[in-house]
Length: 139
Image (cartoon, rainbow, N blue to C red; front, side, top):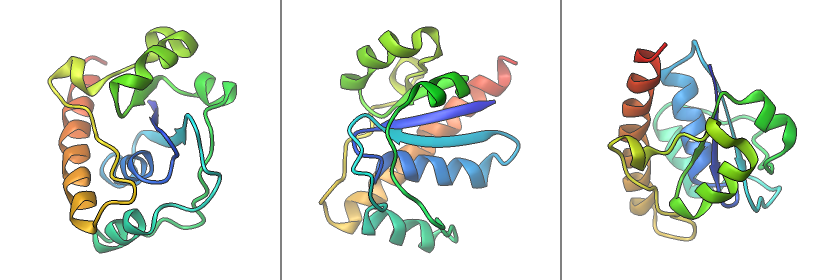
């Protein structure tokens, strides 16, 4: 299964989701992208948080959503409702939202204190675990 996480800049939420998922579900494939990417590094607090979890995000570079990524993905997973319409226009039935499956939106922690990133990461983990149980159960 190929899952693409999407957020605004591909520096905070979607990289956190990508790296957590790669560690927790190594038998599936995960990538991340941004609708408005910075084409830079992961945010300092996201990298710090992953390292504290024993995950080293080597050579991460933010990237934008592309046709190739849409074709690669079985599921496009947005972090917030404001992205859903755009993704449905581009990816149709590939869109999987946390909030339509008992989960929540993931607010953008960009620029916030480290504790906000910790809360964001916990919410991501909970939503991803629900999503994977749902997706793995439907196969």
